[in-house]
Structure formats: C-alpha cells, structure tokens
Image 1 (cartoon, helix red, strand yellow):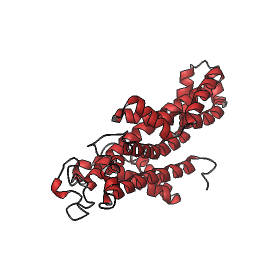
Image 2 (cartoon, helix red, strand yellow; image 1 turned 45 degrees about the vertical axis):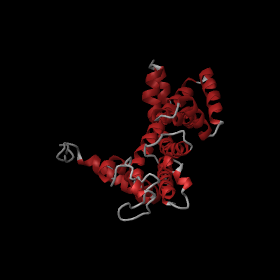
Image 3 (cartoon, helix red, strand yellow; image 1 turned 90 degrees about the horizontal axis):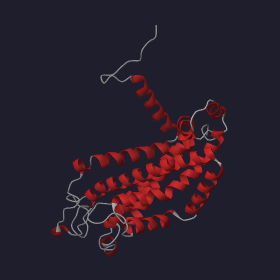
Image 4 (tube, one colour; image 1 turned 90 degrees about the vertical axis):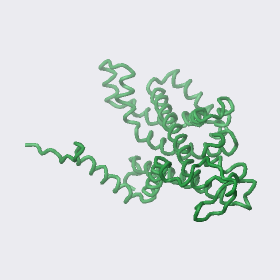
Length: 298
C-alpha cells in the first residue's frame, strides 16, 4: 500500500517543502557567495514589503528644524537638506528599486525568451529579420538606449520601467536563441511536428520549458542591471521625480551640493545601490553555475 507524505495544518504535503529547504541549504553550502547574495536579496524584499512598519519617519515629511542633521539617536543615518530622514527614504527607496528592477527584468527576459525561441524555431527570413533588428539594438550601450527611451516616452515610473525593459529584450533573445537552436533539433520536437501539433503548442510546451535555465540566469542578471539603470536615470533627472523616495534621486541635487558638509546624504544611498547590485550579481552568477551542466560539478 502506498504511503502518503505527511500533511501540515494547511493541507500541503510536507515532503516537497522539506525538499525545497534541503535544496536551498545545499545551494548555500556549495556556493556560499550565492547564498549570501540570496540572503541580501531576501532581506531587501522583506524591507520593501514592511516599509510602513519599520520606517521610523514619513519619507516625505519635511522638518526644516532638522536640516542636514548628522547621524544620531533621533535620525540613525542623518537627514537631508529638507530635514527628511535618510533611513526612512532608503527603506522606501527599496520599493522603487524593486518595482523597477523586477518589472523591467521580468518583462524584458520574458519577451526576449519568446522572441529568441520563436526566432530559432521558425528560422528563415523571420530569424534573419529578428536577428538584424536585435544586432542594431545590442550595438548601443544599455544606458544610451534607456536615455533615448525615457526622452521619447517621458519620465514617469511606468515609462521608466518600459525604457529599461526595451534595451534588455535583444540581449536575452540572443542568449535564448542559442539554446533554442539545439532544442529545435531534438527528437521530441521532430515527433511533435510529425504528429501535426501547431507551432504555438510546440513552442509553449516543448521548447520554452527547456530554456528555463538560461532564462532564469538572464532574469537574475537583469535585476541588478535594472536597479543600477534606474538609479543612473534618476540621478540624471530622467527617472522618478521628487518627492518620491528613490536611491538614485537621493544622490543628486543637494547630496552633491552638500557633499563635504553632509557626506551621509550621498554615502548611504550609494552603499544601498552597490549592495543591491552586488547581491543580485552574486546570486545570478551562482545560479548560472548551478544550472549550467558544464559547471554543475565544479
């Protein structure tokens, strides 16, 4: 008689949960740097979700009596030129960074994966046209394309996400296409075509699931790039606008003007950006090593 795995009080089998936990612990043990990156990313997400509960002040509240106050018991990371608490703005700024980062990375990687798989599957003139268009986009640096997109679309938050997403699509499409080309020649794809399945069903059920490893790698690498691009555009005045709490926005204007008098205004946002990008890159590199068959045994 088959033995069913134990169930918890929510009715979910405990076996898959314990296996997931075991896999996560094994990943951290084999790739400690990736584990550190994953912990930092998880803490960043937790801070963003609980911002109203843990932020000591309203990030938009102006206190002219506490302008340029140094770090103290009242304001752990000091205040800016308007008397706003730097720690509170950093906490709420993580929301902006994650919204832009996850939004741009997910849409860019997903659209790139679909285009890459479609290009590899159909080949012929479709592949030729798509690849030439991708080559044109990829010939420009990310920041240049993002600047051009913001100039065309405007500098609202949805437009900022779109401006960062568009330059990422061709980079993901080229990587996914290289994996999809080999998958297209697999016997199960030939069998699906011989059975008369529609192209859409073959792409969705037989090809896309088999490019998930490079897709996840591109997704995690894009997250750090998107956060850095958002901070760069906000610093240049082309991202989110005042009084929104955003790390790049905290680095411009008064932070530059009062760099010697109040260095904490630029120091802590810069550290937050560096730590977030570094954590996502560590996690992405470790995930690549874990999912790449050539590196899996290293």
